[in-house]
Amino acid sequence: MIYVLFFVGVTAVWGWTFVVVKNAIAEYPTLPFLQLRFILAFLVMAVLVRRLPTRRELLVGLAAGSVLAIAYLTQTLGLSLISPGNAGLITGLLVLFTPLLDRVFGVPLKRRTIVAVIVAVIGIGMLTGGPSGFGLGDVLVIVCAVLFALHIVLLSRWSPRLSAAPLAMVQMGACALIFSAGGTWTLRMPSTDVWIAIVITGVFASALAFYIQTWAQAHIDASRTALIIAMEPAWAVAAAVVLAGQRFGFLQAAGAALVLAAIVGHELAPLKFKTPEYEPIET
Image (cartoon, rainbow, N blue to C red; front, side, top):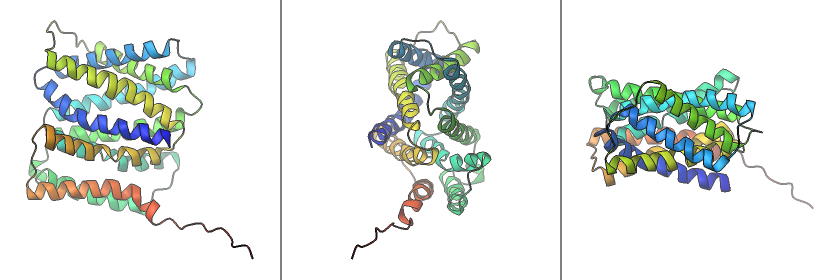
């Protein structure tokens, strides 16, 4: 139960940071922002871990961290082009992509997943205003959702029996290296508001959040992880409305409701329709 409670807190932080990051990259370049975010995240984890990773932790962390870096790059670029609420909802599709990718590893694909994907596609169409309103930002965030789903699947298969903290540290380090190798150094100093965003995302939404995710996924499977992460788009919409003043028209609101229904309904369906097990009555 403790794993679930901590993970729910992580999804709340992730939902909030859609607004935080949107505001930060409006005044500071995307790649340097990500570079500073993950350098800070790596340093925080290095202080917490205080040991070198094992060979297995290094290999798994580099592989998972590389996927994570590309996911954050596509998400942040997409977020610069669309609203934080829309980005949060589309990112939430990772819950549906997770069982689709799990199918590659031999996990059977449920009928509810196919239904949920169809409903979500209709919802995204309404949310973006139809094909004419579906732009590059939406495509980038969909790609990020696929990559986040892949990250979940890889961690669920590789992280058991590995120490969570060193594995999270290596993932943060991989992200920092990838963004630094791209020549993203800049002489322009971030403003105070951008530094606050870097600290929030680097410490809480990256270092501690992925430490908790890696720790939790050593104890829960990919599908249950996806159920918890299904809360993230709801937090993102709430933050967008309350903090960023985003407003949805009737069609957009209906589309957002369909996307949330597809995501949450997909994860709750097996719990609702699960046949209860009854203990035999002694006579």
